[in-house]
Image (cartoon, rainbow, N blue to C red):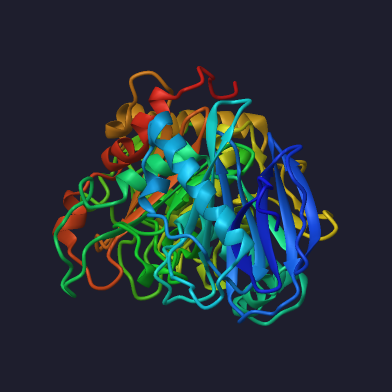
Length: 528
């Protein structure tokens, strides 16, 4: 590559690597490379070029982050890195002068490295380059790290972990592969450019809240483990704006491990009822918020080998009459069970179908039963991404967009768009009337129910708490007019009922994200 060109080499990737140049400056001119693809963006161009010498096979990705824009991930095979720049530059916002000094230093180093790449002098640190966008006055960050080797010193952000899981599952399903690993391997073979939906400010805010246990109980489980949590924020078109798969500063040992946000597998307690029994009952005219019901267990024998089921968290049923919205906001267990029982004409199958087919809640066939649908005692349980997605119609006039952290996927050579999540239709999951009623009931949880600690100063909030009977897991789903979010808290191994019971999921949600949503509220209201 010509030393006088203003191309910025950010990583050598097997037989392909990607460079960034400012428009109208320089051309690719090197006997060992050929242009594969050029794509314009802002005041820069992303150029994929191919080296003719094959390097060792490694999975790699290039993340291009710009303040206020999407993240792009370009994938090739094999990674050679020429720069050693501290990862902290990604996390810390530098002053303009400091960044300009860094740019000048990196430019000098990059020009030298571009001209004579040293294949024997590789290091394990990420390349990180800042590019000023003259139109916005903001810095664009180009970050390269290896993603195929779980033992790498590089740390894969939770947003990228989630994207890798999602694209691997997509490739597995669309190519009839047997496992996610096969999908990952197909992605690793290269030829794709992946753009993410994450919002840099929201992701940074969540990263800060999840870097330690400041907002979470610090008591150990009986297996000696710290409490864990997962969190997701998305907009009402299904774009995942921020995600956390675990509490604690992420390390390389976490790479490609279990992602609580994406995988799920935990029970969500009564947080399931809005997307199972109550949603179905409102949609089908079985109740209104003011319809009164008697607080009593199901008839003896309904649940084999169990007497007086279900009980409420505060003890036995009271034996009094209350409106449906009271059962809902206080998480009283008896009414959801009665709706399923339906005076002996079971609605279990219908409500299971409503949850899984209308709201796309991830449930197992074994969950088509009373305890899973009424109490959230599921076989595995949905992840927070799927749970937030199922709640979406209640803040969106009944509209459902499938959640995704992928904005679009392109063929790196042809530019063909393989996935486009920016131009897609929604499903009308429930009627606008049902969405309005459910939103009002969820708002009552925040006004006068179990979620009052989630109240915000300015923005409207609707939400639902959830707790498992043995206090192993807590869940909170929070909706504002701008965002729908969900959080799980619990122990991966063992339990500590005192620590979980003393935690307030709605207060933790407010501290982790609610205050941010309030400060950045657009002024919008929920659909009427």
